[in-house]
Image 1: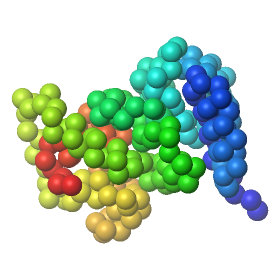
Image 2 (image 1 turned 90 degrees about the vertical axis):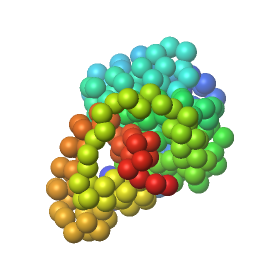
Image 3 (image 1 turned 120 degrees about the horizontal axis):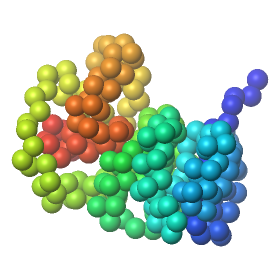
Image 4 (image 1 turned 135 degrees about the vertical axis):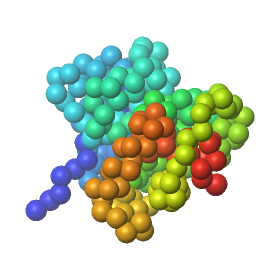
Length: 218
């Protein structure tokens, strides 16, 4: 019996790039392209017609309903859809903003085909993907960003600190459960509680917050 393919949507207002990405993703084993869209409005239209992908490759800089607005709408209305942000720009402020709004990862448009496949695999299996050059940008940006400096300090238990350290690793949630000797359900409880405590929307957002507040040293 063949396994179900991961359904991918591609939203980008550059037709040539969008078509090339569509052909490339369709060539990957276990992936298929569910639909293409030129902007966020087309994404909304497809999804409200119950055409629901597993993951959306989402251009940040679309001229009509850009990636910021689209990922906000997706997280609010369809949080089960995983968003992988796509951009020509590696500005840390753009990256951090997209991740805080709920994107699971961020890649540049000049990546090679193997890295794109790795990014899709990681988002599906681990719920996040950040290449090393993006991780460095984020850490640099967080070191310069003091917008949370006056917020109350959040106290964490040792178990929560251990959990945060593992969240910032390449481990899957199942691996984290084994490392901490707890059930996968308890991992889910930890994750959801910390989403609420830190007011973030994704594993990447949680990692960003943990690094920024000094709970995790990278």
